[in-house]
Length: 445
Length: 193
Image (cartoon, rainbow over all chains, first blue to last red):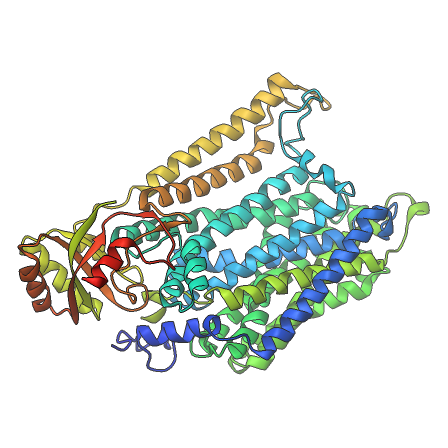
């Protein structure tokens, strides 16, 4: 039985004439075959990076945060830059699976499972940065409101940094539940196809004993719908709250009301770019070109050009408001961003985020795999610089004697590289042992 | 454990499944369950299932989260540890909103997933009978509970509804703790018979 319900207007979501069984075969093939050489090399490299990250963090914990090059004015450096960057990347998965589910965008099913996995791994990476910045990391649980004998002394519930704790941990938990509840039926498929005893037992556990009963599917649909409804405001709240870390302070250049929408748009922008980077590789390595089609890639490029333009408008608005406000401090902060010691970061950001995504207005370029891959990396470099530029507003404060310049130490760089190691190690394991694409009617018709 | 006898029909296409469900129900048979590899829209209606009330549970959990966050922070700021920050209010509602929102979502999501698992009776270690190895792949399976007397006639009737494969087999109707790599006693007995 072939996929009969093809729209005449839209291009097919799955290329080639395939029946349901063929789809299962294709998607389960990477899981059931031996890992390829490419996979092994990639996994080995990622695991090595992860180990280097562990070493850098170990060094920092042993000697204290003094091994980072933070100084009296620049109290936040690469650490929070990387935190905000990873959280931003972690926005695409839930956005794709939640908001696009509510908008009934059929094409999302080709990419949502991989994007959700990416979200979870990115949030895991993001979480590392504030935790290890605590220095005495064994006291990290102090941020939780638990009954204690110190008063009881409670955390400050009206501090944006504590809001972050709640926002990131809630986001992680809800994304994980959303992702896993979607994976349960997929695990059941792998379980029933498994040849070895170990696979049957392991995927049997992971599938929670799912059999595919009609009533269960009905509840599953309801669960997905409500979780999508909950995740939609949640995903918008997370980067809003992250932006409050800056916006509620009284630092010139940070104390602006434009931050929440501008951060959310930036997060979606960088998240989609990261999805592109991963999927362009994944579809090639795992031979899933029929499922993650050029149509999918083009749809995501459209989101990139939209959010990239929003981010661009936000940059220009910031400049204009600084000028128009007439506030000397604000004007100086923005003059320094454009022409100060960190001018190179500002212009790198402008080039990567505002100018280059505009090339996606051309259909030919939107549908070009190599160009997409190149651009996805450019966008993420740009978004990293955006956070760096914002945080480096700290390099001039109100007292000229404490003005300074900041470059990261090797432990900070090592920590950042290590977070890539963590991300890609998880992603490689996911791509090998989990189903990358869900089999759903909507993904076929 | 309650091992029962089932007449099982395997369908190749949902376009065959829907009329089959209709025929089986109008002939007066009680369908034990239909197993599909993915959610088939409208199948719950065809089977006469009520709409799921899971979203109501989600709403109640959400409200619980809201009340917990507001109550807890309010109690701390006004009663347990009131502090004076430059004369600012001790119950700053706008500044509570982020945490109240996050806990609402957290309670709703966690509660709903747990309720989902409870209602479906699924968790790691739980095993259910799989009537056909491809019911999680591309086949649609219908099971009807039968007695020794009507087994053959039911199977013949199912065959007439367009099933590509039919069989009568003993199966555990409920869930139990077990491993998917092991055969159950009743399955081994059935194979020997």
